[in-house]
Length: 602
Ligand code: DMJ
Image 1 (cartoon, rainbow, N blue to C red):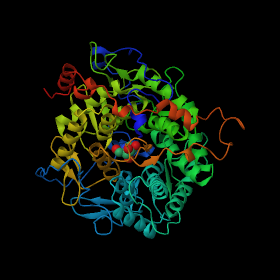
Image 2 (cartoon, rainbow, N blue to C red):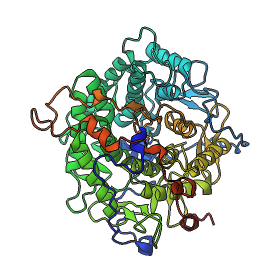
Image 3 (cartoon, rainbow, N blue to C red):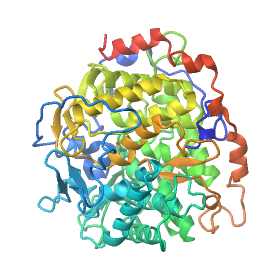
């Protein structure tokens, strides 16, 4: 994110950081009486949540339980210097000289590539993401640029141009293909064509917009998902050759259907073709219109034909996470006021109904703040777990200037990390134990750590990053890469390295320690997509070439001018963090200890 937006004392238009006192907190919210549990909420292990198209948001836990882990005793620690994030020093999964290419993912234990599971089309855990299109190579492109590795970036881009085709009989999840593939192609295209070349010379000789053409081709193949849906909310999956499969499910998750606007909007604005933004924006608005009249909250699974909520759980993790993220990020990028208005209202409703614990993070009495899963209609607690995906939320709070609250939630997740050396996919805060024990190398905690460091410059966050780095080295390092932890307690490994490890986890770790990186150097303006792809916050994304998709003809009141955004955020405050915030613990030590006790660390 651009430096000025990271400043703790600025907000992006308006100040949504008002804490409304939670309704039923203190020890009451730790009570074992959990209204809604095992009711309409998908119960762990029993409901095929991946059918909703949310596997990338963690719902894979409910189906295709991770089988056949290739157990390995934990490797010996190989601490690296902070400037060398894991996997990056060896380029272990990129390029032709590695084990993954041309397949989608690296099997880090067996040193081989992995593509879609053709033998078992119902293996959505794999098939939702792997499209037989060299996924990891594509997803990691801008990581190479951010690291300033122009020769590898250029090599990888050429490889993509020469070898990747989307004319494949692969049924993939629209959300995953969008954030991992479309987003990365667009990011790399923007980097290549940037006249300022902030990362060094990332130009490609004779480049003829090939990545943009590839992105366009992929997006056109995803468009059938938006057809024949009564609400405008897209189908969760499409076959890249044949469109929506005849046996397609009508249920999709909020995050999967409602977090396509950043990538589709960029594509539309680069091409001057409103189609893509139009369908993505229609989906967001359709979901938004289905929020509860009572609480203003959205559920996590919806029927795209009837508009009925199939999953009534409202939370910040799997199935919901990036929906909120993209309301704000769409506004940052495109400056459309309606996106900010939706975000501000959503943020307020989250504070009203999901937040438990004391009112202020760093003062007062009571339990530490925590965001829980509630019934969207009543606001009542639905279960007592939080998932690792929710660890992105402090980073989002930093972007709107709610740094104080971000510090507390981040501290809670860091305490869980300290206990296990990783984040379990689901952690039960009541039982003080993992509910779902695997850790697929997810980036969310390090993402928030990086953003909090940029906002506060407090070395505590460098310490957190170092801790994360050392745990990754100690527990996940494998022969040819880094492996998913099958069980965070037993530290057994699975032979899988998801592509977001390179596109996000490594990138955020690298950026955390690279003080001079152009991404956060003052004067540059970048934003991260939900998959960690950098895109410049550029004037050309703020002027739509059409009026048809937005309110009234000729009415520009829905737009925020770039200068307005700049005025609201322009400062060099990143370098002006008060000393007491910079050199003391970001959270008072008694509150730190309280959290450590709550997760069984002391
Ligand atoms: C990534 O693919 C994206 O960050 C997405 O929004 C949610 N989860 C994974 C990483 O955990």
